[in-house]
Length: 87
Image 1 (cartoon, rainbow, N blue to C red):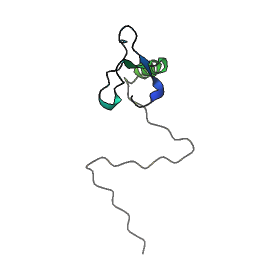
Image 2 (image 1 turned 180 degrees about the vertical axis):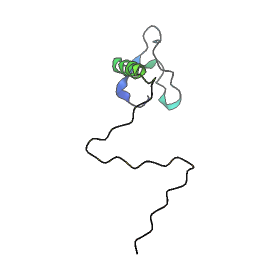
Image 3 (image 1 turned 45 degrees about the vertical axis):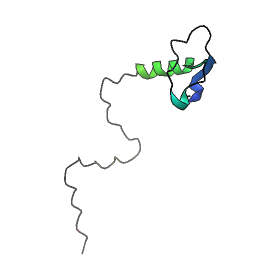
Image 4 (image 1 turned 135 degrees about the vertical axis):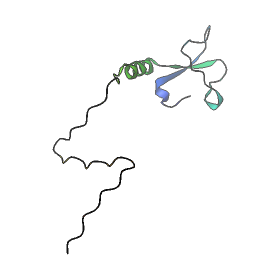
């Protein structure tokens, strides 16, 4: 059975195999006459994740009450020179 077992149900096959039954092989495969199907919660989770709007770039995150993070140099650019120690 896959990870997050609480999102799946292992049940006996009644008349015919369910259309939602997972096609598992190897050690994950259920015994003969059994099937693994996603629960209602699993279907809701998939619907939620599929509905997330990812068609636009995310805006920069604003820090609240803290100093802004130092900019990260781009890949391939030379590292900034460190200041000379005081004499």
